[in-house]
Image (cartoon, helix red, strand yellow):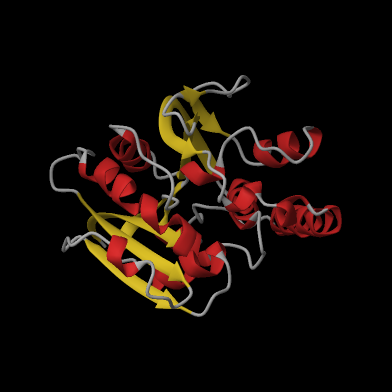
Length: 255
């Protein structure tokens, strides 16, 4: 693998207008010497409405495919991910300065850490930001901690899946994002936490845009029957991985 961090963004027509702001936040990132980023933008569908917003930059590639939701789009984009690490960036969000460098510093320093997350601020329509109480301490997130917290707190994790930066081989081994209409990123987060230690950075690593068109604000996202089904399969996957005792990194075996 080369010294490259891959940024993966799923996008659909309503959120495409925010891509230039996401791009500017990427341009402002300063990486360690010898490192570079490559941005994979994957449209969830095939329309003519997204491409006009894709930056003209050799570090940016654009793909399209039949619609299947953001998890499918991100997983399809993995076929083009040729770096050691994969960073999630939703089309309507922004990375604060230093976010990528902090992720890389943790993952490069400790091979036993499979993934990182960070503090989030909501980016409100008027340009102001709002934080959240109850973030964990800066430092490692032990295996199983996210699932335990999630189950005890109304299916809300203490770390945000939209801030994930993960080792590509671990991400591929888990099959990418879950095949769900929503909560696919939470499902991945819990699976990661079942098999590997993670890390939480108390410095702000994401500006999470709040706007009227975001998927999590739609009525279908809180449909009780669907939500119960999503939460059940997310939890069962995480528990099964824990029972099977699959671990990352894999210990060397004699012979």
